[in-house]
Amino acid sequence: MAETNKDVLICRCQEVTLAMIEEAIAEGAFSVDGIKKRTRAGMGLCQGKSCERLVEKIIAEKTGQAPADILPATSRPPVRPIKMGTIEGERNA
Image 1: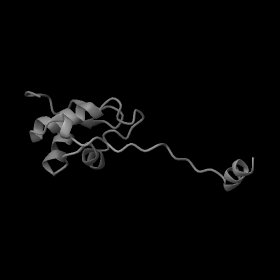
Image 2: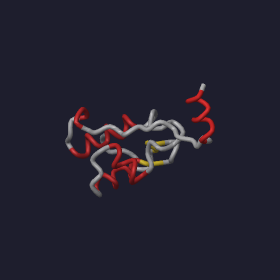
Image 3: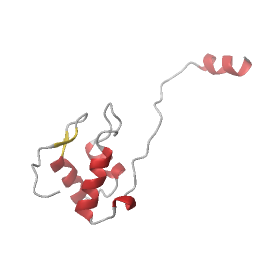
Image 4: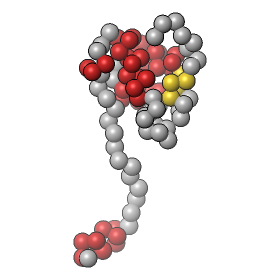
Protein backbone atom coordinates (compact mmCIF):
# COMPACT_ATOMS: atom_id res chain seq x y z
CA MET A 1 0.00 0.00 0.00
CA ALA A 2 1.35 3.38 -0.93
CA GLU A 3 0.95 6.33 1.43
CA THR A 4 -2.51 5.85 2.90
CA ASN A 5 -4.69 7.23 5.64
CA LYS A 6 -3.75 5.40 8.86
CA ASP A 7 -7.34 5.79 10.15
CA VAL A 8 -8.87 3.65 7.39
CA LEU A 9 -10.81 0.71 8.87
CA ILE A 10 -9.45 -2.68 7.91
CA CYS A 11 -11.74 -4.69 10.21
CA ARG A 12 -15.12 -2.96 10.31
CA CYS A 13 -16.63 -5.35 12.84
CA GLN A 14 -14.02 -4.57 15.49
CA GLU A 15 -13.10 -1.07 14.22
CA VAL A 16 -9.43 -1.97 13.70
CA THR A 17 -7.51 0.61 11.69
CA LEU A 18 -4.51 0.30 9.40
CA ALA A 19 -2.41 2.07 12.04
CA MET A 20 -3.35 -0.55 14.66
CA ILE A 21 -2.35 -3.39 12.35
CA GLU A 22 0.93 -1.70 11.43
CA GLU A 23 1.67 -1.22 15.14
CA ALA A 24 1.02 -4.92 15.81
CA ILE A 25 3.41 -5.85 12.98
CA ALA A 26 6.05 -3.52 14.45
CA GLU A 27 5.59 -5.38 17.76
CA GLY A 28 6.29 -8.72 16.08
CA ALA A 29 2.96 -10.03 14.77
CA PHE A 30 3.81 -11.72 11.45
CA SER A 31 0.73 -13.95 11.06
CA VAL A 32 -3.00 -13.35 10.83
CA ASP A 33 -3.44 -14.96 14.27
CA GLY A 34 -0.75 -12.68 15.69
CA ILE A 35 -2.62 -9.64 14.39
CA LYS A 36 -5.90 -11.10 15.64
CA LYS A 37 -4.53 -11.57 19.17
CA ARG A 38 -3.19 -8.03 19.36
CA THR A 39 -5.99 -6.10 17.63
CA ARG A 40 -9.10 -8.36 17.55
CA ALA A 41 -9.20 -8.02 13.74
CA GLY A 42 -11.24 -10.95 12.45
CA MET A 43 -13.10 -11.57 15.70
CA GLY A 44 -16.31 -9.74 14.80
CA LEU A 45 -19.55 -10.96 13.29
CA CYS A 46 -17.98 -11.82 9.94
CA GLN A 47 -15.21 -13.91 11.60
CA GLY A 48 -12.59 -12.45 9.27
CA LYS A 49 -14.43 -13.04 6.01
CA SER A 50 -14.21 -9.32 5.22
CA CYS A 51 -10.78 -8.43 6.57
CA GLU A 52 -8.54 -11.51 6.63
CA ARG A 53 -7.23 -11.02 3.07
CA LEU A 54 -6.57 -7.34 3.77
CA VAL A 55 -4.62 -8.26 6.91
CA GLU A 56 -2.61 -10.84 4.93
CA LYS A 57 -1.82 -8.23 2.27
CA ILE A 58 -0.69 -5.68 4.85
CA ILE A 59 1.55 -8.25 6.58
CA ALA A 60 3.07 -9.22 3.23
CA GLU A 61 3.77 -5.62 2.27
CA LYS A 62 5.21 -4.62 5.64
CA THR A 63 7.39 -7.73 6.15
CA GLY A 64 8.39 -8.58 2.58
CA GLN A 65 6.86 -12.08 2.87
CA ALA A 66 5.07 -13.71 -0.01
CA PRO A 67 1.31 -13.75 0.65
CA ALA A 68 1.32 -17.55 0.29
CA ASP A 69 3.85 -17.82 3.15
CA ILE A 70 1.70 -15.97 5.68
CA LEU A 71 0.01 -18.30 8.13
CA PRO A 72 -3.78 -18.03 7.93
CA ALA A 73 -5.99 -17.55 10.96
CA THR A 74 -6.94 -20.61 12.95
CA SER A 75 -10.68 -21.10 12.59
CA ARG A 76 -12.73 -22.79 15.24
CA PRO A 77 -16.38 -23.77 15.10
CA PRO A 78 -18.78 -21.87 17.34
CA VAL A 79 -19.26 -23.47 20.73
CA ARG A 80 -22.28 -23.28 22.97
CA PRO A 81 -23.09 -25.19 26.14
CA ILE A 82 -25.50 -28.12 25.98
CA LYS A 83 -27.03 -30.27 28.70
CA MET A 84 -25.44 -33.64 29.38
CA GLY A 85 -28.87 -35.25 28.99
CA THR A 86 -28.91 -34.16 25.37
CA ILE A 87 -25.73 -36.11 24.68
CA GLU A 88 -26.99 -39.13 26.64
CA GLY A 89 -30.28 -39.04 24.74
CA GLU A 90 -28.49 -39.12 21.39
CA ARG A 91 -26.36 -42.08 22.44
CA ASN A 92 -29.40 -44.14 23.48
CA ALA A 93 -31.51 -43.21 20.47
